[in-house]
Image (cartoon, rainbow, N blue to C red):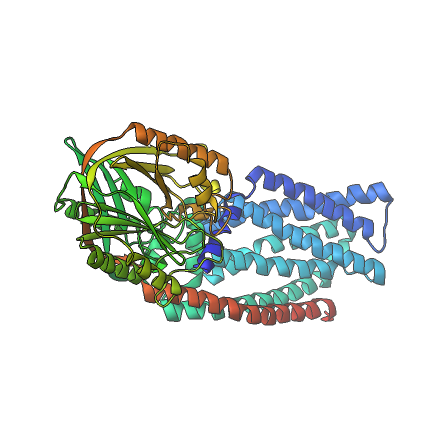
Length: 606
């Protein structure tokens, strides 16, 4: 999912655009500077230095600044009138400001060339710059606002038309009253033909890259992009409706351990073989928190064996997981005994094992090696093998997801890590002595930290399990993996607490992937503060210890609508192929069209 994650990393730019008033102020300042700079480097300076700055600045302010502010307001209104999305007033103003700066750079470059060659290139430079921003605006409106091409092309005309109209008015009233003649016709013809050439090249480019998405997935690439931006910008979940067109219904499983007192269930530890993705609040990205909140008691939702193939396409799909768990809870048989927590290791694979009544938990990690998701088929193999090896009815497999680098790969059938897992499970001693069990629970939202530090909505949850005098802390961060080495740092830091064992896990929530980076593992920043939260959470869980009965369960989840193995792979391969093709087509089409436009404007002879 590197492609999707790279796109997610761009979301910070969507959310951090300047406020409208700052955009307007910036346009006024930059337009004044553009005009002043051009007048200072004009090939035939008419006034002295100070007058060039003032008069040039006023010219730029009126011709570029005022018109760009007007276009920013008009663009937003027109796009909204055509039921376009995403273009708020601050976005529209920012786009106009960027376009004005592009135009300014073209004019200043033209001015420098004019000074060197002693040939006046202002008008042609102005026309070329207007064509550039016309194509740029058209592309942005079409790609992000979910409007038709003809609408985007029409709205894209607003800013360059206003600028050219203002230039003609200033030229007529302040420079040359004879300007309203052949010169206007020349400007109109040059601008129209150049604009058509450039915008048709953009149209052809988009149609070429959109074709694989429509053919392979049945979705429009511009719909995907515009709805993605709407989600990042406004929290809209409209993108889920697009996912429905490429969804695949699957059957999977959810396993759990339930702890209860005489008053009822005290805690629930869940490991669903459903992936909390793809990103933001889409689909199952916030599944660990949403699912936990559906129960009235302390609930930990760990990361079960699953990859992005098993991303639910909509938040509503999480209800099916809830229903399966509640159905399974009705069948659970409880007892008062459990085994101690024991670790086993083979090659890269490390597991922590603890038996509960007729089931067991296997906490799997490859730390200190870096590995990503464990694929569902591999997880099923682990379940079947551990049930057979240990003679239990339920095997709760947890992918601790606690050692990450950007190069981390998934554990897929055929990988050497799969055989490491198989071998390490064969080392489990099924004849474990059982003792009475106590648990204590603690939950802290970690309010001083947020998504920027890789911390999701549920913060950290800790369950301390005491069996036969041994205390084991199960620490679960609502986070998308953990920076490599941070797990061991946490384990070392809590060594003086009243616990004997600890395992640190993450939920793999993808809500944290909407800021800063495509991947955003916990432990990149503020490690010391995070460790203090862990220490406090463990101590609070110890203080909450009480005797419980325990039971385990496994339940099937049927017809869960997900991305599916076929479509998830198809999406990534399509994105990859489009990116590869675009690297060739974009320069050929756009640079060629710009070259034609340049020749037409500067050497067209009209």
